[in-house]
Amino acid sequence: MKKNIAQKKTTPDHTLCHDWDAKEIEDIYNQPFFSLLHTAHQVHLKYNGEMTMQLSSLLNIKTGGCPEDCKYCSQSAHYKGETKLENKKLMEINSVLAEAQTAKKNGADRFCMGAAWKKLNDGSQLNSVLEMIKEVKSLGLEACVTLGSISLSQAKKLKKAGLDAYNHNIDTSPEFYKKIISTRTFEERLETIKNVSDAGISVCCGGIIGMGETWDDRAKMLEVLVNLKPQPESVPLNALVPVKGTPLENQPLINPLEMVRMVATTRILLPKTRVRLSAGRKKFSNETQLLCLLAGANSIFYGDSLLTTDNNEMDEDRKLISEFSKKNSLRSNNNRL
Image (cartoon, rainbow, N blue to C red; front, side, top):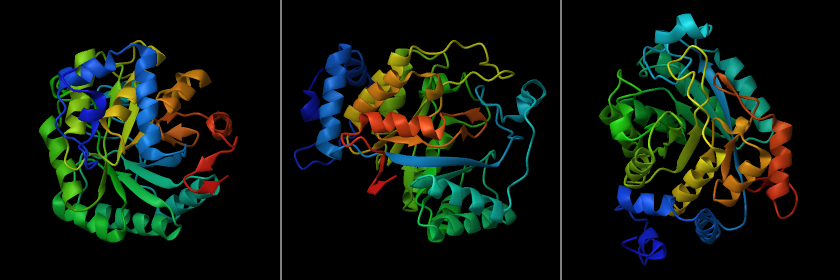
């Protein structure tokens, strides 16, 4: 590498760097496995202290019928004939509140709401979401949404309602992106991320591995993320879940250790960011997931489902994190479950 990791990671006053390039990132990613894991763990301990885990619950508040053509997604209207996914209208606010109450009872810190829209429309859509955010916040939960593209004025309204974070993934490298999605440009995604950030909302932005991209694509995706200003508050890392009826249904599953490398590299590049182990981990062994936690993952989606795909059962996650915790207990930020 051109610079020592410790030198490159931060400036002397601990301001995070934004000048990584893809070659440097690949050099980190391709280190011997245990060297990479050790460095990532040391970075994690330095900037995040003892192990705490943010538990995020994810609810699909509007299912299916999305006009986007993302090749991995069962909610795309382009593949409805093959996926057979049932479209569902926007949930009632009382139903969302009940789900949020259950999530809090089960130990979640953050409640995320996702809608299968290309963009958020003003009027009834926006107004309903604003009320949902207010209700979730009244429970003492962090509120996060993912609603497609939003304007700056919409972002400001979401912020005023109390929104903590907005998820808008870039999915992959700018180059490979065109092979996965044609209905929204990479630049449009970056514009939404800028609108969210300019409104004072934390950015949650990550991607998916296992869609047929190269190692270089993964490095270039991380290059975009690390050079965002400000850097994302959280980075969800997803392993592709091949869904029957989508163009990627026959894509082979990744080697689980590839996810460990992605987590470790992300932690080194983004020392203070929450690295969220997201979709696809149900296919990972407990040992692989523990390695991801050792490498710096400090957030998981907690609950039996993620939008339209299965997730680990909550009891499994309690046991998993208990095994990793020094005190042999599941800790959710400052709360013990």
